[in-house]
Length: 116
Image 1 (tube, rainbow, N blue to C red):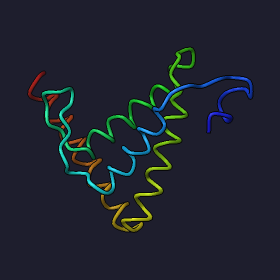
Image 2: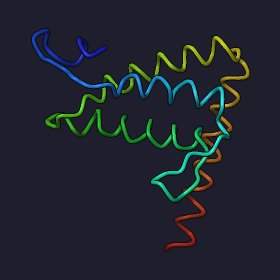
Image 3: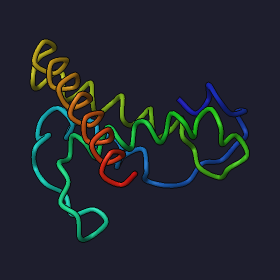
């Protein structure tokens, strides 16, 4: 995927695409398992995954001069989602993503009301 955004002689080093593949699969396969993020707040993996997706999409379009390969993150995520869809089924996977996205939006709305 990085060849789409970068020239052929650009070097990318890291394991973040692999981590995002795990996140993509976790969104579909274990969305309600809790992750302690950032070490103190329990948050469901599905919601954490959606937040990371939104952050990376924003970064992809606004952070062109950064040293972060957002396209590699999203490529790993797509690979993980593909695996999750294969294991879970397309209909269940799409339903899960829609439900988690709605829950995430509701959480953001409620948080903005509480902390405003």
